[in-house]
Length: 123
Image (cartoon, rainbow, N blue to C red; front, side):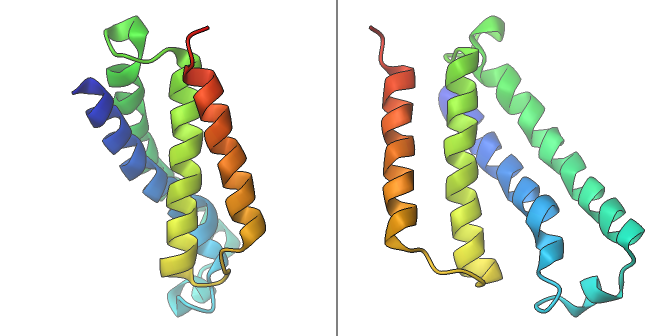
């Protein structure tokens, strides 16, 4: 159950991360962003990033084998990166709508899945 909580919190965290890191680049879709100064954009991004950490830190504490969770640090980081790419891809396609998912993206994601396999494989 800790694994599910950990991954769920990582998904929520990555939604905030993607919006904080890339949402301000969507000025054409969100006219209110165009009116903000650079300092305003930075503060908005930091505010969103605060929520990223509100979910990221508990996810790592719940998931870490150091605190009773099921994952090593390498596994936690690998999960976080995989979740980050999935969330980023979904937000880019369905919310930002600025890029199309192409075959080369899918090939790259396939290799990331292979990397996840090797990280989790107990040799």
